Length: 191
Image 1 (cartoon, rainbow, N blue to C red):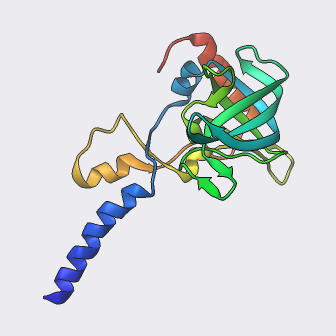
Image 2: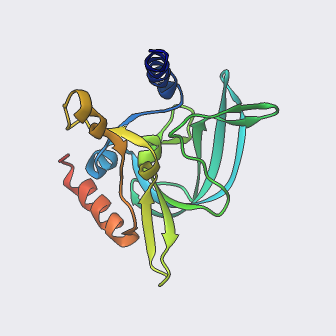
């Protein structure tokens, strides 16, 4: 009987503690990301710093714009994302991408009221660029590591767990991503 109570308590704690450590995003299709973003560009991180702004810790990352696929951007932009490290304090928000100088990515961007940018859908709007052994440039959507809720799946109970799962584009040639983004941008229609 004690084992049964212990298992019940462990299950109860798992349902309470797990949501505290996770961020769940609504899954967005590539078309949704493209239409929601004001700009889409291939960028290279050149610097970042975290600081307080309006009572929150934010990380401000400066990027060089390599190529713009949607929208018009200057040669350098700053992206603000919630969280970071200031002094003895660290603010971590799951699902918010972080960049180091030299990192290259394709980012789906939204202008902020402060005159800088944010990433549409956080990890969903972040496609990291890496090179295959043969030197081909590939992209992997950062949501491959994060859970997202599939709005198209209105299932209940056990099948709902399938609706909340990691997913995203993995190892797609960058030129194919570029082609899809430009086509979605030109179509102006969400699928």
